[in-house]
Length: 355
Image 1 (tube, one colour):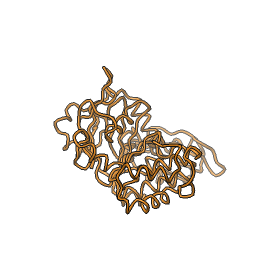
Image 2 (cartoon, one colour; image 1 turned 120 degrees about the vertical axis):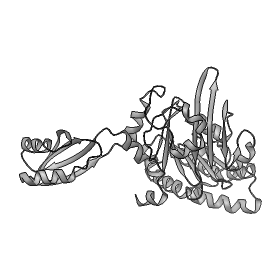
Image 3 (cartoon, helix red, strand yellow; image 1 turned 90 degrees about the vertical axis):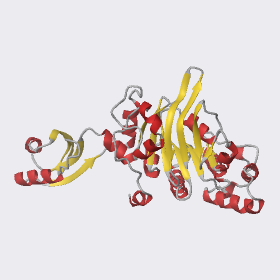
């Protein structure tokens, strides 16, 4: 649905975006991450046709944004970080105005606006001036304008900014539901939001792509060891000695004391399943295991680790998955390589729902 090839944006000698290559499939929800100033908003503005690129191409539904910008804009709904609101209009006046701009069929306009207002829960403020709305309501009005015209592609930049916790949950559910009929690029600084909603993520740093993968594969590929939290009832020194006796365990340290035992953090060789070895070792000594659970790196930790690297010096990992390499073969030799997962496949929607 979206194809980005060698996309570059320069301001004089400064390259804000450098040779980006990626694709987004129809019906996919893609997370677009990066620190402030990394080039996220610049990239999204180029995809929508709002900002011209210096070089490279962007295609949406097969249309080149630089050749057929009107066809692209018909198919894209965009919510920038600062919603494009006319604050002296009422909500209903504004959405009618946006509908006219997007040339929505007059016969369908009224019902479509009504459905969208109900969907994003702004029907109760339809006749209020936008300038008198709270930040959360303004954000939802901005989301409503992106949905006008039922575009095939939605590009959402920080869609939950200013919303309260309940509203954030509602918007996340809405985005997941919209993903069944729309292709979505979602940019957010809330890692929990990206993990909950997105099937695949791109991390951009200093204008370059430094990782493309599923959230699960990305965090797993960056873990240098397996970590477990284990609570055991037994004498501390003897328990630690017994744990260290297990093949593959690198380090054991006390983490917390409880009335019924002590919690230990156990570090072991990567991909090593310690549950059975710990069970049999503790059973041999007669020390009851009260709890054992693996500890995984979260997306926030992975993001910090990846963006702390210099994208010009990082090597030894895959930057693009196999499908994207096939689409951009002539460019892969020059790509910065970061994500070392050959089996990075998209998680199906069914699997995401199961999770």
